[in-house]
Length: 284
Image (cartoon, rainbow, N blue to C red; front, side, top):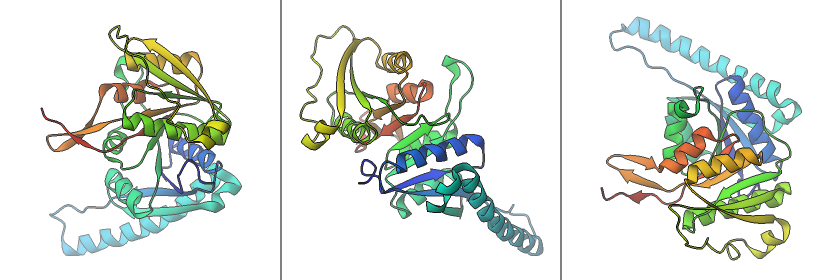
């Protein structure tokens, strides 16, 4: 079967140890089914406008050579990271700015998932994502898995916050599929804000019958700030993965995400699989 519906997993790399960890995460997910991995490196060239034609031709020749070297380096990087598993990985070196290249490759490879390494500054209040990751998080048409360390194999504990929205429903079904594949327990967390007595959404009808038979699901209700409760529970229970439904909306000329999503992705102690649904237009 496919990995929770992912037939192709795109993993951008920059030859760093962090991107090697992302590639290992992609391989762990691909093992769950018959998904293929596309490892990609973006190499950008733009000559200054004041260069002479002769100098420009020389630089273009050097750039073509560097693209060939990058292709060999990428294959070697995948081999050193995945060993024998590298044979099943497609490699792509493209000319373009990283964020643009990732979004273009997501479409051209028909990727169903993007896996990226990301890092931040030390300290809870100062943790920031890289600019490329932030943009992919806002604009990717498919789920994005952000990682900061080595994968946990096998995945045993998956946390999925729920709130009754369609995006939350889609994220939970994805979490249930991964839970069934890995034999993991999926915790559905509903956070009630402001002392509300509103009951949590009924998730019984969210999972297809065949998934319910293969997946262990537990429900928890907590009160407080959603992001804080998600991070606290993931830390306390040593969760291996968070699957988070993330609504997006248009604000002026760009896409924005809610603060709960950004805080959870920035501060989570484990990888976060962010699932975004249809984009909505803000009325502010």
